[in-house]
Length: 264
Ligand SMILES: NC(=O)c1ccc[n+]([C@@H]2O[C@H](COP(=O)([O-])OP(=O)(O)OC[C@H]3O[C@@H](n4cnc5c(N)ncnc54)[C@H](O)[C@@H]3O)[C@@H](O)[C@H]2O)c1
Image 1 (spheres, rainbow, N blue to C red):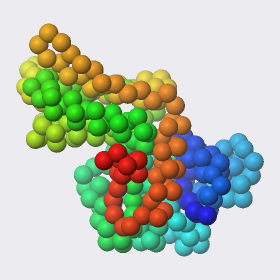
Image 2: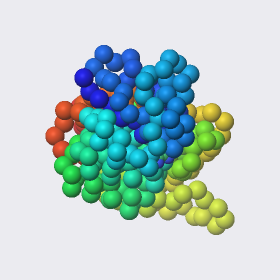
Image 3: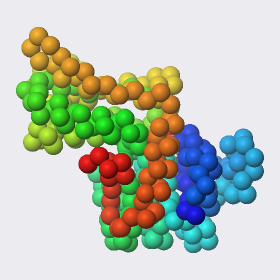
């Protein structure tokens, strides 16, 4: 039985992840951690049956992990909170699945160091869907063949999303930049903004859009668009739980979803 702790348990992704954990014969929810609904049964928060797991306060994460002894902690919170949660998890030798996005380069090096110093295994990705992981691969292929085309990335998300551009769009830009030997990124354009050979990145926010990503390769007389659209968050939650099973048995290291899916 794989014992799972969830940080951000009361959030949109947290709830879906717990639903997937409950469906699995091989997994058990042992801790639900958040900064709201403290003391309530997480099943009550999710409006299902009581699960016998009370929501515990993120400030007590160290004690909670020592007591509940999870094999894997799944974090979908917000960047600054995730840094603390990940550090506490690493210190307690609990393997990790991290879906939180919007880390600054400094935050990312802090979490990478905590994972490496404590010898645990972690899967970290801004997108757990199979489709997006294939999409990133297609972008690298397209960029190789269209290296002199103008490249623009346009992403759209719901109006509650806090970080911009999305982690998925940034990863798309990095994949293309690495393929082409390094590119400058330009975020939106305003005023005099002549185009050079940069990758343009644009974020749209509105309504309940789950997540759209379009990469435009525009040349003389033609253009190609490679597009991924998420219809629901189910694909992310399913992928994150699959990653948790995989990482529970993995050697120390920092992995991506492509490692879990075996599509590297
Ligand atoms: N990697 C992926 O596939 C993927 C998919 C969807 C969303 N995300 C990312 O996951 C994160 C969460 O998204 P969401 O839509 O569930 O957001 P949400 O706002 O619905 O949920 C976030 C939850 O985290 C809680 N929280 C805040 N601080 C905390 C702390 N210190 N410890 C524990 N919990 C804390 C909040 O109270 C909230 O319940 C965002 O960064 C989002 O971009 C990633």
